[in-house]
Length: 189
Image (tube, rainbow, N blue to C red):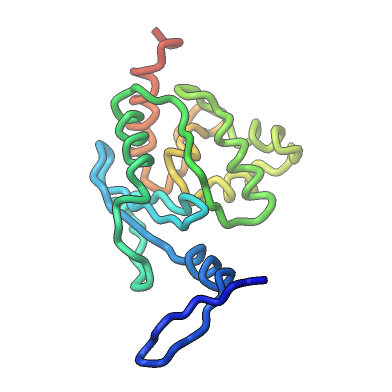
């Protein structure tokens, strides 16, 4: 049996169950904006995990929603991991993610997380990896919809000819991230 919790709203007592309270908390979204070597980053998350890591200095900064709560504490571990990444001390992230997307998009985003630090791959290789070898363009579209840049490393995907192509944060940021990883990758030395 779900025990009801008493809560006062505008002088009225409202019965709220633990389940309702839990569901409300799961839906709450918090955010934090931080500086990084590649510009301002917006982090957005729920109790389930990180939902967005967006470059705010690029051509398409994300508008902060009025319903979001500005608070640093839920992002402290992620911020620490990002600092370690930029310092060259972290090659893999351990972050709970709360990604919203189609089944295909989530398959692509999972495949992106398997690209080794300091390495690149092509859209075609990812298409083969997710079992859709003819879907390079769809992989490109899913890659472009990746809501969690850096942690889901879409910057590691390049054109089949080795050229840098498309990046939500802009090609200079993509180049900077790849150079950062290459400079710290012990396999490249």
